[in-house]
Every structure is written in C-alpha cells, then in structure tokens.
Length: 145
Image 1 (spheres, rainbow, N blue to C red):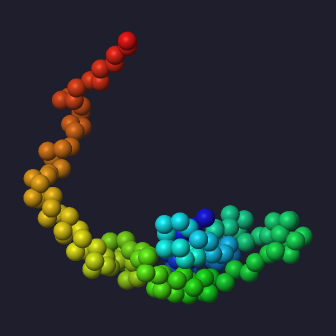
Image 2: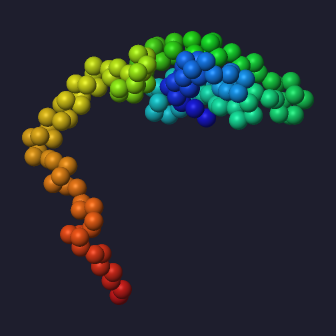
C-alpha cells in the first residue's frame, strides 16, 4: 500500500527517468475513510504491483484485471492533493526536481520559529549529545530483589 504523496512521487520519478512502465505498476484500489487523515473524507488507496503487471490466475479467471494508466493516476493524485485542505504536497529539501525541491513557506516559518525557541532555551546539540565512546556514561545498575 502507498500513500497518495508517495504514489505521486514514484509515478513522477519513473516518468522523469524514462523508465520502462512495463516493469512498474501502481494501481488504485479505491477510496477509504482513514481516521485522522483527511477529516472524514475518502482517501485514495494505491498499491504497488509486485507482479510487474502480469495478472494472477485468479484475476484472469474472475476477469478483474485492471489497466495501468500512469498519466491518469498522476493527474488524479495531483488533483487530489491540490483539493485537500488536510494534506500538503510532498517535498524534499534540496531536491533538484522543481516539483519537490521547494520547502513550502509555512514550513520555513515554522522551522525558524522552532529554532528561535531552542535558542531561548539555551539548547545545543553538543550539550545534550551523549559521549560517542561512552566513556562518561554511567553503566546501568541492575537490581534483583
């Protein structure tokens, strides 16, 4: 199973590198209400086919094989994420792909606020980081009683 944002990122990545779609298939199972995810609205459930698109014997017998249409899946996922007020578009800070490399302004502000709060608390990683060699760390005491 894949989240909507991960499915979109995978579809975009395969499309961007001109990979062979015959070796990569993502299907939509349907939409389900997932508690705490989209405020009670249905969420698309995608899955990655580990059979490289070849139907299982059961699917062939039942006639439940599904076509794989990557551009329609990408269009749907883009639209779903754009319409959702509970979800954000995925991003990877520093990524070269313009679709994913930019950190949304609201997260930049939130990070700056959190860093400012850490400075006011006199927090520093060096002060709280344990000694890597373990030389100054007390050994755990075991008590049997």
